[in-house]
Amino acid sequence: MIRYRLELSPDDNDTVLVTSSDLPGLVTYGEDRASALENAVDAAETLLARKVVLDYETTSLVVAEA
Image (cartoon, rainbow, N blue to C red; front, top):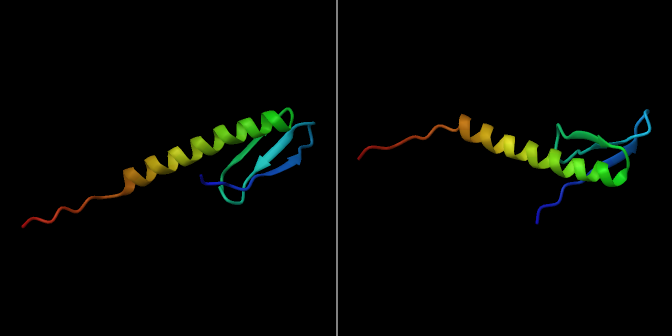
């Protein structure tokens, strides 16, 4: 299992902000700690899935002919 560090901090509108130095671009929030963590899981899955798609789309295959 891969683990990513999450930073939870109180936001200025009584919500919990979540960021991650392990996953640049992950920024989400929740009404409380539990919902913030739930949203962070969804955001991480979305971010990582998008990275896989982008990496796939930008990878070119080179076929060597014999």
